[in-house]
Length: 513
Ligand SMILES: Cc1cc2nc3c(=O)[nH]c(=O)nc-3n(C[C@H](O)[C@H](O)[C@H](O)COP(=O)(O)OP(=O)(O)OC[C@H]3O[C@@H](n4cnc5c(N)ncnc54)[C@H](O)[C@@H]3O)c2cc1C
Image (cartoon, rainbow, N blue to C red; front, side, top):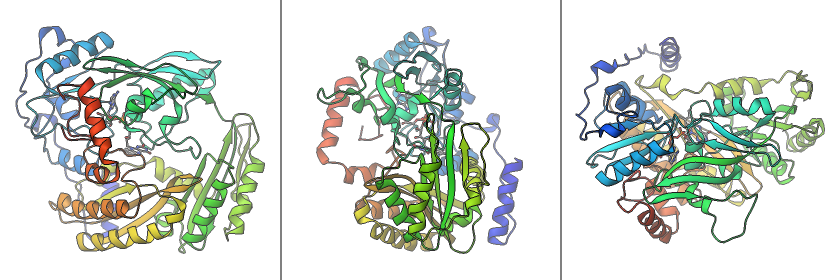
């Protein structure tokens, strides 16, 4: 509550009027529709219909969902929630759902921001299957550097299990503390500290998934050219084909050598050009992200209309001083300014030298993100993220800002729009736009829709993707339907029919039920 109060005070300062955070409803005060199913005796050990279970599995992590939860709006909860303890219990649960035709929603950490976990309004009944009890590292192959990991493990628990072996996955989505391996694979998550290896795809060696028709398991291979990759069907399947129970993921030694610096640029354009040259020089910094002047001011405390570029190198084997200096030389050649005292270098002793400057402030803002803090305060805040080839940038940026800006100004008071690159590739950046503004209470959903539709249409029309790493879910269906080859929809429906003939798995996600 203290954090919500502090967020309310910050908002009061921004809009010049007092804002009080609304109370969080008590579970006992929430009225749920009655469960529309009866759990067979054989499953009651791990399947429950309690209000607490149903309430806590109704929504993911999108700001409109948090707002609904805060208002006590739980019109479409799952009728039951399962927490299988092993694959036998999972098989029994899925067989029951399939027999009865219940909509079945796989659930990892519950951080979906694209409405990937909701019960469809027209489902006759729905069961959410939470993988939280399948949460261990089963095996580590230290020679090949890979581990067999159960899908329900959370990011910090995975890293804690690997640490004693001096190994790490180093896949850090911003939601790392609350999201799971299964969720990452199902949504093709994007990690940070990952200019080279960005999506979880790059780490997947093999997968194991339970479908209503049986098990789907791929062979562990470092690479293979044998026809279509089975893992490619699992990656990004978003719970529509089966329930991922485990994966072999590629690991690396924990880095000890680091080099980090923040560079300021007088213009956004110059900073973006520097980023392109650094990534095309194949220096592979672990972190290469640029914040436009609005974002640099808001989240890194910079003033004076400067863009901020954050560069970070890391390695388990090789000192990173030369790499950071090479990247900084490119940045300086594009007008970048860096104070040498702000270069932070760890030469492997765990005692970094240098100050770090604005990078630390930005890092704290990034890690401390909590969309729930502003829910219900009359502030609408959200993001949209995409990717585009360099040849279309910066025209893409100009077009998106123009179209979204018009929608924002019409929908929200005192609106802000800013951008950063969360990931960059040799052939293009992944821009991540944040917007916020004051909204009349009760009009949040309608105003959000105006801005979101404008963003989706602008991004797709200008040649980008409707999502770079947040997934499709139900939210991005319209954009994805336009962007993907039309026949991919037919192929996916055919694939789904063959493993999920009754269409129980996550109906409405990716394709129509
Ligand atoms: C504050 C915040 C920051 C975020 N930052 C990032 C980011 O940096 N990068 C990024 O990529 N995403 C980010 N996200 C989005 C989200 O965290 C990712 O999509 C993440 O991969 C979801 O993992 P999860 O375990 O929470 O899955 P859930 O949210 O529980 O599920 C996501 C989808 O996957 C399906 N699913 C989950 N587990 C399984 C399984 N075992 N088998 C089959 N299907 C399954 C679900 O049905 C659902 O459709 C962020 C979200 C929040 C709230």
